[in-house]
Length: 94
Image 1 (cartoon, one colour):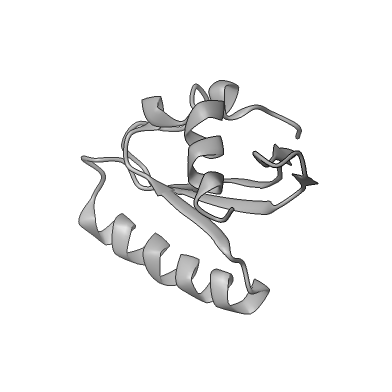
Image 2 (image 1 turned 90 degrees about the vertical axis):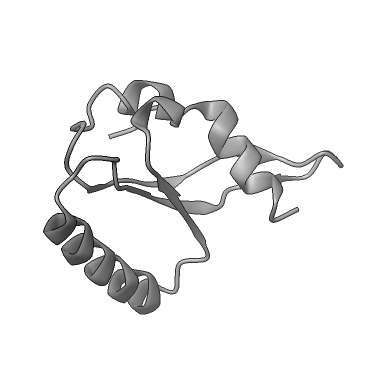
């Protein structure tokens, strides 16, 4: 489903980890180039059970290696998940 990061945060559970977003995102670079990176966002909220965090983290690592994902971001507070946050994260890749 095509959903913005701002809308997605309302769909995420507050105390359970999730892989909420694997998204091809239109990113406009400062030099005018446009790219469509595949972004993988992992939600591991503060307050979720340590067993769940460990289970999701282990399977996340396997998925990232298998699919060879390079744009992998973790979010601890779902309120931080915004378009601006994602653009800022992607800015580190140039």
